[in-house]
Image 1 (tube, helix red, strand yellow):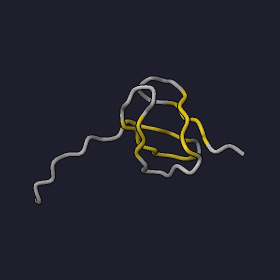
Image 2: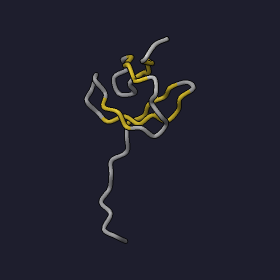
Image 3: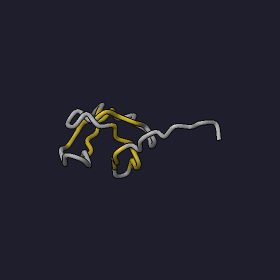
Length: 59
């Protein structure tokens, strides 16, 4: 049994390895591009570029 799973980096198209216990909503750093990616699905594993955090001015 493997401790990692693979998914496609949506920015580079390269296959990257993720921990097998990764969860939906988790943010990971892409080893291929250095960008932050969000896990949006586990079956199949789908990654998307993580949204930029916007300033919250308490509104």
